[in-house]
Image 1: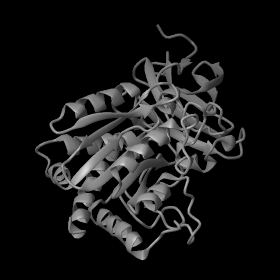
Image 2: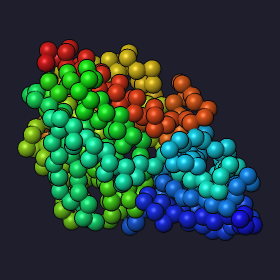
Image 3: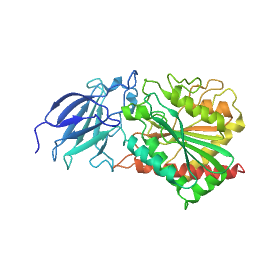
Length: 381
């Protein structure tokens, strides 16, 4: 039976929203901060009771979120079956309500789920880890535990000498990073996939699909259970503040690192790009050129990737060593990089129905691994 007022709830894995008011099918909403943190941007909630009626969701006070530049041009993610995530009609008014985003959607069924990006639940994470760990030649390793007691899961495989680390979701709201991981692990664990076979022959691979499971479950954008931004902890991680980083960095110290990719998402830039380690104290042109060589290979083989848009490069000697990519490049002499994917769309290849999507994340994961095969061959490995 359809009631006059819609119902909104978010008391589930990665749920996050504050309901200011509801009037029929119109709701005014605000995005709560991460616990003990100034960061606010991630939302994920369910609306029920609006079959065949237009839902109007007004998100206010968005100028006070972590990345207000992320709202212009953004379209809200929506799903009715939690399998296919499309985009709802979305507009942003900078002059209203301290920055107001209005989302309109008419569900065909009684429930619709809305999120900043297609969520990647902890249940799906557990399924991903379990399935990968069952694959031939894959070993599971718990690197440590989070502040909430969750495991920091690592999957290891390969018989080669080149130490490759792939890790994602230091910032838990960047759920596209674990969709990328799902695509990458499908390649690496498929015995019929030539890219995976070559990488397992040439490399020892260490894969951490989710560095921040506490923040993921709690519905945080950027921090762990204590409100700590893990990607500012890599110089001096501690068991009290950032056990996730401490565990991963200790495991890296034990194995060494030759190649590392830290997978993220960017709120504002509507493109896929890589950020490097320019500005580290030990920078050499040779180490930098090896990174740029990988970028050129990926740009050539992946239409979804480009190098024209991205972050400004740090000046010599000014790199922030609390950031993972800089610390790993400095600490190990590794070719390290941060992959950024959009919350919005890839403006060079826009998709009106889905924008940047889980499906595209997974395909980019495959392309990144294919580029790694070419890069290893060019390196003579």
